[in-house]
Amino acid sequence: MLFCKDSLFTPGPTPIPERVQKAMSQPMVAHRSKVFSKNLEEVATRLQPVFGTKEPVIIVAGSGTSALESAVCNVINEGDHVVVVVTGVFGERFASICEAYGAEVHRLNITWGKTCQPEELEDYLKTVNQPIKAVFATYCETSTAVLNPIKELGEVTKRISDALFIVDGVSCIGGVPVNMEEYQIDILVSGSQKALMLPPGLAFIAVNQRGKEAIKNGTSKRFYLDLNRYIQSYDEQTTTPFTPPVSLIYGANEVCQMIEEEGFEQVIKRHAVMRDMTRAGVQALELPLFVEKDADASPTVTSIRPEDGQANAIKNYLQEHFSMTIASGQKQLKGEIFRIGHMGYCTPFDVIQYLTALEFAVNALYEKDVFGLAVKTAQEVWKKHV
Ligand SMILES: *Cc1c(COP(=O)(O)O)cnc(C)c1O
Image (tube, rainbow, N blue to C red):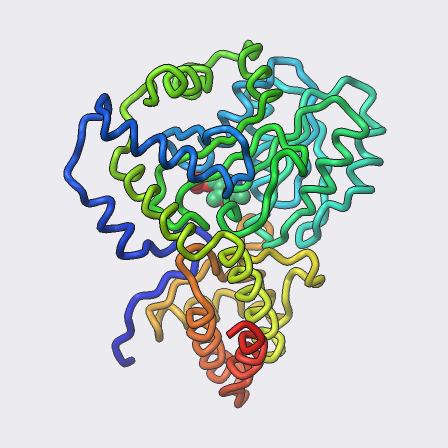
């Protein structure tokens, strides 16, 4: 094999721009200093349009799951009835966290690879004959690569119930549109290592006024993840209650700078184009897409289900021959699908790169001459936006 540069196309962690790396290598500063407070405030407010929120975004040190857990432990009390929309591994994780905090969990199980339709949620909510404290949903279900219709699910939630609407946006916030007021989301959480092109380690939580009230009134036991502490520290001293990951917050500020320079609308458009290029290219190779409907497909990750169980062979081929890392399936989809992340610091040229690698894999594993097919098809899609 000829030498190749390492490339990373997993749906998290994702590549880090050099200028973000550089921002993170600045000398350490005290976290009880003006310079840190200024940085924290810049990040918390510059992220507002990305989260579609009117409030500064809460920042906690932890992986994405700590953001999910904080969305549960701050508002769900033992015995509360909650509805969790489960479209894959991460919906299931929300349900497990709710169970850990003693909630009565009602799972709306959707076939993996499909989105939850608003009518399905509506019918399901009507069958729960209990006051529902919260409805939990996953925006992009990373394990299957669907993008749930969050705005429509929010509309149904609020029309049918008094529940809080709590959304996991870990693998798409920063690459998709969102507006908490319009989508009727009370709590929206995300992490740093996916579309926000940072290393793992930051949890982001955006909360509206109703969410804040619920957090104040929460009775579940909690300490490090008690969001009241974070809100109070920020409001009173523009700082965090515990030592924050100062370097990551420097990096986050540089990410905000990059998003502003490109324009968030353009960022969203770039992700949509990468999804369309990827789907068109994969279809040109006659590899079956796991998410059948274009309207259900996430702009940040694509899943492919080769008919003859070659998912792992393709993934391994890319690793061995091109030093290119993609992801396999999780849980029941292990060995069934492979997934390509195209989010954050990723451009149409990167799409061309992994489609080229896929052409080689199909050429070798299926003994089919497909050189140029996926690339050309994707270029035709890209051409409309050059
Ligand atoms: C990655 C991810 C998470 C959280 O993962 P961590 O490993 O805890 O960072 C949660 N939800 C979704 C949808 C994800 O993609």
